[in-house]
Length: 117
Image 1 (cartoon, one colour):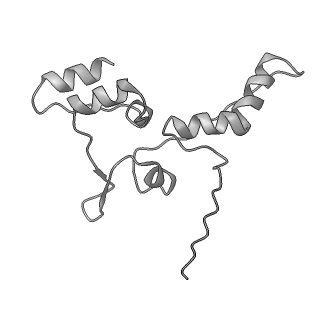
Image 2 (cartoon, one colour):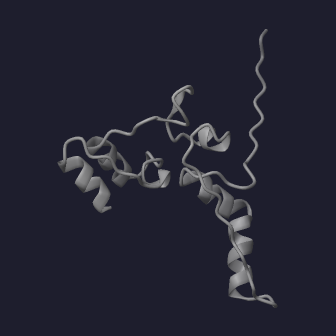
């Protein structure tokens, strides 16, 4: 996006963009962006700790710049709209949201057993 180029070429410039632009480390666009600009940690107020836009801090709302995304479907019968909402709300759609660096409404659970013996 233009904001990345502007910040990269103007000393002391600040820019805001969605976390999904910088969260997929498998994407060459992400790695190129992170080579050009510095990602800052943000404080809620002067008395609080600063947090980067990591998924864990977004989920706990420690990172202050968050927003909810809602899907509203006014379709009265099964069709394209309902199919899309069903896909996004399903396992594959929620994994895509997670991979994009966002927080899915239904986070996948991973059970880890630690053997201390």
